[in-house]
Image 1 (tube, rainbow, N blue to C red):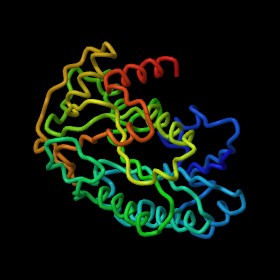
Image 2 (cartoon, rainbow, N blue to C red; image 1 turned 90 degrees about the vertical axis):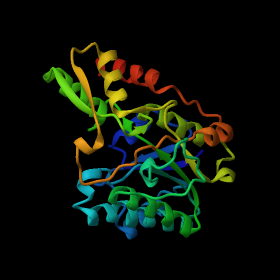
Image 3 (cartoon, rainbow, N blue to C red; image 1 turned 120 degrees about the horizontal axis):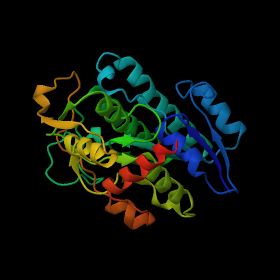
Length: 287
């Protein structure tokens, strides 16, 4: 039995964790900012202590990559200070902290999937704050698991799949970047992986950094093309270079994650990204 705190529970991953659920023996507290502001250390400490929390799953984050370039203070507050608060409380109360991070901690110069031991080098404010959050956890001395993921999407929230579907229904043609390579991640599959970790009684003995995304790799253009194909929409996807779609945030050109470690240690399933997309689209039809 565990007392579990899920922060950022109204976001994409938090919503999928609600749907998946944990063991019926566990007591789970799903919170979002209104219930628990992780940037307030005293509130976090009171919450964790009063409810005898032994595992914190942090899904709360500032994830607006472009806006972060102009709102760096807000990104730092949530992605660094908030995470540091959780880590310090986890250390003090002897909790396990499971924290979600990102492929954007890498510089994108690799030519093969990034392992957990790869050197980081974030390019954007978002990536830099997420890496700083990781470092805050490592320096805290708490029991931890950092799970880096990439290109997250789900049936809810603002994400690439939902945006492409909306645009493809309105326009005969849309342009999508083809020179950024990574792997989409269906939030439902990531939630299932986290639940599998929680079901492992020896999880604390395996603390460390892990990578999880769906299997395979593609460009944003490939991803958009597959979304349109599987949805049966009549819209042409036109490939363009990143240089033709300028933005304030610099994104890694290659950010495929190596999932060997999480497979080996926890035996989690890592479905192919196209198959996962198909399941998500079917869920949307009945949503």
